[in-house]
Length: 315
Image 1 (cartoon, rainbow, N blue to C red):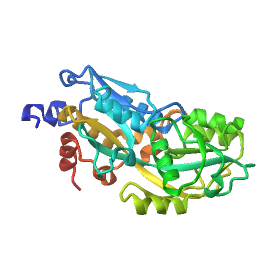
Image 2 (image 1 turned 180 degrees about the horizontal axis):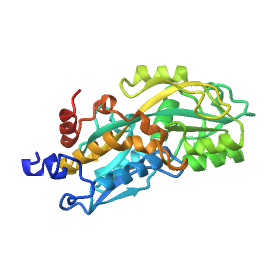
Image 3 (image 1 turned 45 degrees about the horizontal axis):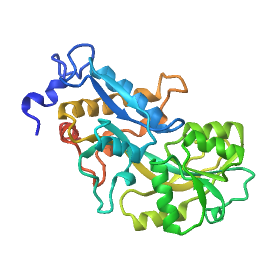
Image 4 (image 1 turned 30 degrees about the vertical axis):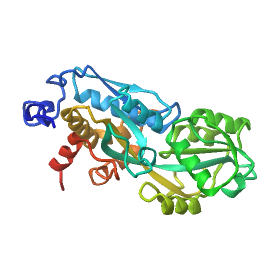
């Protein structure tokens, strides 16, 4: 447990209880804060970069470094090995067979929900999940939340497919070139790689309503029936699918005052990521970040610094 001297007050500015901004020093022994994000073309890369920028503004003297990764499972591994301090993950990837996360990591907050996309080109003969049988797909990047959820779904349904482990950008390119027949992507909406394909080639999203129900029945907690809205991609109708919450994780050894400061930044500043930014830098998923859902991290316990922040901001 952190002592009072190392409580949240260590990261509050002296005047008026304002979070560290232009004055004050970063907490001791924190020259770098490492945030594990995701691969090229993924929302994790975009939202992770935006959050790192905001956090760096609030911790003068600390360099907030984003660490590119293959996403969820890779980020969890980096946290456990001490190669990252914070990391993004889908909720299902961090919960083990016993319903609990691995020792050594905890939750800072829930951020936004990802939607499982099953993308085909408009001329594809594939019209349903069952028709994937015998086709070549992208499972998503190795060690990503997409791969974790897609492999779980394929195993649960017993469908026989062959596939590659390609990141978002690689999957999109392979779909256009015909090297794969369908692309899975567990991501926020809209996701850059899919938006780019949709802007140049007509695409379709395959409905996954039945599969969402199967996942929710077998694995209680992380899976939510949802719909990708008609506004997500040009020319693509609203499509039923499954959503998975994304959480920001912290290694347990990260100081509570630092985690408190990060939580304060996320819940008071994340909205700026959606406005007054170039289109390429905007993070529409940030609209989902709020205190009410932020505390809902399932069976992953909150880091003590995050728990303190939520106690101080009860509504």
